[in-house]
Amino acid sequence: MAVQSVGAISDEPVLSAEELAARLRGVGKERYHHQHPFHLMMHEGKLSRGQMQAWALNRYYYQSRIPIKDAIILSRSEDPDFRRAWRKRVVDHDGDSIQEGGIERWIRLAEATGLDRERVMRCDEVLPAVRYAVDAYLDLVKDRTFLEAVASSLTELFSRDLIALRMDRLRQHYPWLSSGLDYFTARLHQAPEDARFALQYVTEHAHTRAEQELAIAALRAKCDILWAQLDAIHFAYVQPGWPPPGAFRMES
Image (cartoon, rainbow, N blue to C red; front, side):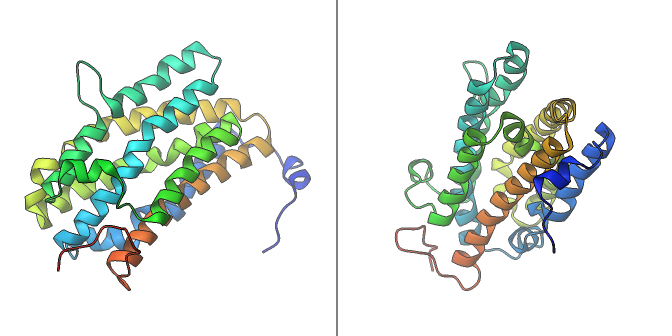
């Protein structure tokens, strides 16, 4: 497939807000990790308790870095209105003196699988490839344009349907996880709200076709980061089942 040059993209007509939103949603339809074999196995009830533990422990590293990612984006904005809207994301995950956050809720999910809280929080058994993928996300929001950093968060456009399906299937196939599903309950309303704000920002601030294509590519990169994490978990704990030295080991 031929790759278009920046100049060629710049010569194309600017997409309308509706067309840009449709292109962004198309990225999710094609590349979001709801289609990953590991998630498909989870939703079919085909994962063991050990495999669910491996997922919860490794995914915690991603969850723990979300407020750091959002703090980086906050630090790059000179618009107080933007910062006021975006900072709720940090509170949603870190919590505050009034409410617990998503990180604490994820820890409870990991505990429901049978893992020890401190073991999860140490992150010293996280797969190297998961760590590299998550750290790459922090690099993306730090090093690319501000528009790309915001656009990369738009996987939240696709997450609500996956969360609703996941909650139903976890209750059906893994009833011992029921006490740890509060994380997903909260995200059912948090994620769509966050996505609406970010989508409006991107469609209003991607003024040229080149900027629009950068935003689409940033969302594609975020989808790849999420997919890569599951690739690593699947390789280590499903097929062929080769966890590297130092990584979490399932009990036989």
